[in-house]
Length: 236
Image (tube, rainbow, N blue to C red):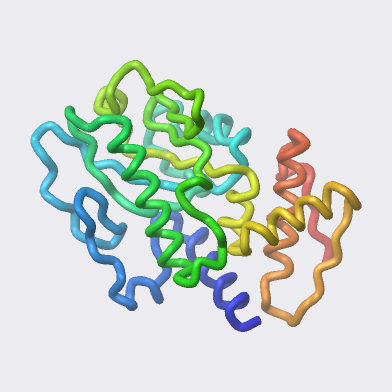
């Protein structure tokens, strides 16, 4: 129960500071730079002359809601200044010779490393296969067997104001990542909620019941194509 409370507090810090990593992770000294991929707090590396440094961020929401989120926050100037529905997890450099396969590996590695820092024991059940797709500028790269790579190399899509690559997770994986609960438990909650239309969460104060209930309600609303801001209500 203590671990659940700590995880919930850690998530609140994550969401509250979209581009920060929890202080307890920073203090642990586990965030060593690895090749072209660096943790958020590390000083920026020397960028190759033909490369561009970009942020890798995980979208906090369901896949079918991402396009609307992206248009609202990045369509005009690409800055995403008021974008709070994401968490930055790493930086990487995209050069003229960077292939889609190389970028795929960098994205998977960044996500797995971030999850490992949050959950060293691997209890969340999240990994590279939790990623549904990622968006870089005008390109979208899907992680499925039938998807073809975009027409240009990645460097062709980081022109102008594009400075962020957005990682979009699978539906249940996105819920598990937001709520910091095991993926199997998240799937069970989703199934029960879909079947019975209601759930009762019991536990000691401060263990994350309200946060989990909110995430489940938002997940259910989004799965029905409704706006969570309008469909979800909280009663005290």
